[in-house]
Image 1 (cartoon, rainbow, N blue to C red):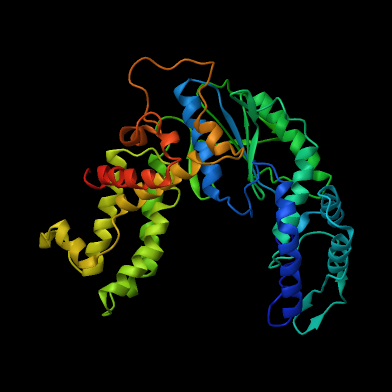
Image 2: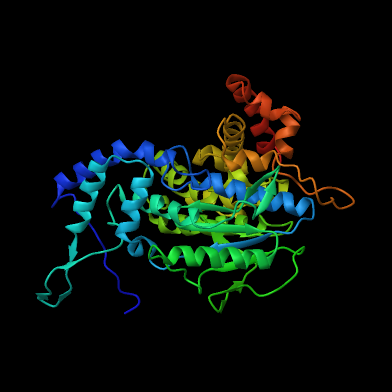
Length: 429
């Protein structure tokens, strides 16, 4: 029975007036609701994406590793979060955002009218009124959930907890209900998890202790993390927002191998198209739009190396040979294969994505963590003797110099420099 929960689906065909009405309400409230969200919340907000938090988290990992600083992470999972949040908590959070009471009453009526029934064979039970959860398939549901979740985080006192980034503390990141908590010690991390667990219960949310995981680097003294009498499992990697997160120097190797594996899986699902007797231009479009994005997701946040680029290009060449029905034994040059397939070079794609993302971060004038952690230079901790590890911005500095963030302010100049940056990765490896 624990796996059974109501699914609130509102079909457009049966209730088009409601869909339209909900969209109108959302459009009117969206900007105000977003204004009350902190930079830690990137879920379902205009101008935000998963890359914001992936980049921020990877930069924190990179800086703490370079300066030998302790870092503890906790990846929080809620049990059926969108179906458990209390209705009163959502309405109360709207009042905090100074939403016009008339909109609040409209939403109250919409949710009070929600019912469900259980159907067994040909018989259905009497309608049961729903008291919690947001409607799945409703455009305003994510906004209501993130608004209520913000009230949960206002109940915890974390202002001086987390990682000190140039005088400001980053304690957590949120993408809707995907949450990662940061701390310097496992004891502090356990206290933060306990605080969040207690605050979440007040609005109907329950942490899934089996799926919540903890991770720490080599500079942290080992000790168990216990929340509500349950010991949280310690792992060495975790899939966060579609990217495998690892601590340590080689934290990209697993993710690159995973991207290649997922790329082959996407290629395999479409193999009937690639081997069909159809124009090559159609195959090229399918590959560029369906396979390449899978292989390059999150590449903007990677530290590029020749070895990394080489692995991706080798995988792409193998896929291109499969598209053409040839093998290595045919001894066809890579240039000729590319001339026939006309697919986008994966090295060109990821280098273009990274250059564009770097310019985007550098030109930001808001208070997002993605730029703050990029400019962060820890005042404590010491680097190891010898060559420093590869940094995310090293290849950018080779092309644009040490003041590349200032140069990114000139969009035209940055775009022209991007050609040289892309060329350095498409001509090597």
